[in-house]
Every structure is written in C-alpha cells, then in structure tokens.
Image 1 (cartoon, rainbow, N blue to C red):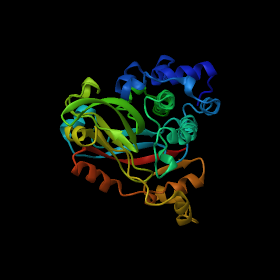
Image 2 (cartoon, helix red, strand yellow; image 1 turned 30 degrees about the vertical axis):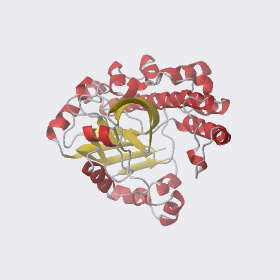
Image 3 (cartoon, rainbow, N blue to C red; image 1 turned 90 degrees about the vertical axis):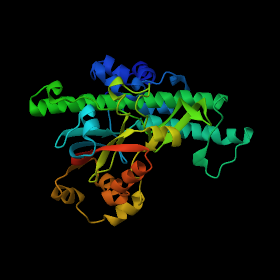
Image 4 (cartoon, one colour; image 1 turned 180 degrees about the horizontal axis):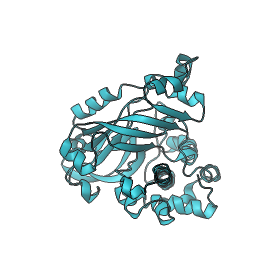
Length: 345
C-alpha cells in the first residue's frame, strides 16, 4: 500500500488509474484496457465526507476483506479458440486475477449518501420497501452530489487495482528473475461491477441517454461497440466472472443480445447461498488451508475468519451461473480458469 497526502488522494479521485500510471505504477497501455480508461470525468472529490477521506488515505493498493481476492490461476479450458487467441488466452497459461474495489472510501460514500437520501425521499415522494434502496432523482442536488462522489470512488477503485497490478508484476519479476514484459503480464481488461454510468441505449426503437446502475453486475458490450478497445472490436468486450477460493472463474465476451435485453450487462459472480455467519458455523473445526492444499490450491489470508466466510460451498455453482447467462446469450464463454494460489485480504 501507499500512504497518500490529502493532495495526492484528491488527484487519485479525479484521475483514477491514470494517476497511478503517471506516477510509475504501471504501463502506458494499461489504461487502454481499463473501462472508461480508468477515469470517470464527472468525479468530484468535494462531495466526499471527511470520514471517507480518512478511510481512503491509507488503503490504496490493498485488497480488503470479504469476497475480494488476488488469485494466481491457470487456463483449464478454452471454449472459443478464435476469440481466445485474440484475447491472448491459451490452455495451460498462468494468469492473475484481481477482485477488489474502492475499499473503505467507497463504503463510506455509500453509507453517507444513504443517510442523506432517506429523508430526501419523502420530499421527492419516493416510497421504497428497504432503506438499502435509498435514492434521489439524478437532477436533484442530492443526486448530483452523489454521482460526483460515486465517480470519485470508482476512480479510486481503478487506481487501487492498478497499484496491485504493478506490485504483482514486480513480485513475478523478482521470483522468476524475468522482466514482466517478457512474461507477457499485460492487462486483459479491468471492468467494474458496482457502478452507475451514463450510457446511450436503444429504448422502444429510440436512442436514449440513460444512467445504468450495475450492482453485482458487469458490463458486456457487443462486438464493434465504440466504447471498447480497438483490439476487441471483433470479439466484444471481455467479461470477467470470478469464482471464489477453490471454484473456477470465467472469461467471456459481450453480445448484441445483452445490448437488447440487459443494457449491455451480465452477472458479476455466483452469489452467496450461505450467509457469512452460517459459513463460519459450518466450517468450525475445519483446517481450511490444509483442505485447499490437498486440492492443489495454496491459500493465504489475514485471518481464519475470512477463510471461513469465503469457503467455496458458501457460493452458488459458478459453472451453472455461467451456463445460465450464456444460455440467455448475455455473454459468450471463452475460457475457464482454476486457482493455483489465493490471497485473501
């Protein structure tokens, strides 16, 4: 991690992963293969609370807890040879997947604005069954402030993953005594999974500018879309659906059907079937690390509690989930990846 000054944190919140690359934490090409090139232009750090700043200052370049992880994986199976070749994937290849976000800063933004939105909803005549759905009109003062704060958190998340990517490259270079460039450690794609973005979509036959909110979902734009890198114009945007510690992860690509049915979106992951408390109870007395090592997966975590919360049986079957989204043609399978080593925050 790096300890930022207030000035540096503001720069991160405005420039995202572009700040990281500019300051030597990455390659110039990295932002090309990042959604929004790693920076949302309407970010406004002035809309963050003092507490959000305090939480963000020491956490840049960290995974965090929960289902976030860094995995060394291997490509077990290729489903689409042509697309895989364009994406640079092949069977037996070793890859690294990073799953994390905006850490405590983003959590604080959510908490702050949920508290602000709850009384605001009464003024705007909004009635909802759950306070977690608290919201405000986009054009309202509250809505405008939130969008600026949310974009700042998204930029922090892109910078966070960029920093981790840089240090992963350095670690491989040190361990293998080979430059990361020669190891082919290029970013395939960095895509968000908890974000609201202005996009243009077809609604009832007409183009409309919409605010698309993807919560637990990820973008899956079709081949030829102008928002994706030129390298993926023939394949569609790479889609990453992570498993969690012992299960597989998938690389897919977006489809035209997703644009028509789900505003260019697909699922983000498998989702839980067991609460964290239930998972802890179920794994009581188990040596999770030893059990994973018997399966050929090396696990390192900050605490046993994190491992207990995130055991594979706490999640739905990732293979079934991927079959469902592919069956609906919201994305198309390219490769299945399985873990070799897992780092939990």
